[in-house]
Length: 111
Image 1 (cartoon, helix red, strand yellow):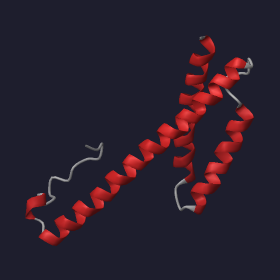
Image 2 (image 1 turned 90 degrees about the vertical axis):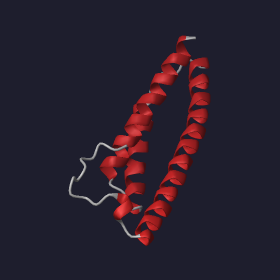
Image 3 (image 1 turned 60 degrees about the vertical axis):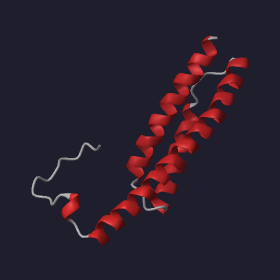
Image 4 (image 1 turned 180 degrees about the horizontal axis):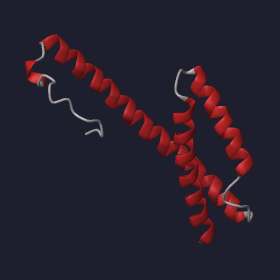
């Protein structure tokens, strides 16, 4: 399900030629595979950041590291440009992840 408005004049999928439906199905399968890969990569990333959080808590370091975060955002924006991905989107995505990591680090520090 998407947040995109639907086009009421659009043909129903079953009215589209079989080769178009097949191509759409194949493309969607690829998207599903990419989504699964993203989820697994994020899980591995968060395993690593949990270890960072425990290390920070053990050594009484602050949960956030603004300098590191700035460097990571700059780096990710450059990677996004090189990959022809909107750097603004990439930055928003990383900011979302950073906020979640900091929340985890704060929770670890409380225990």
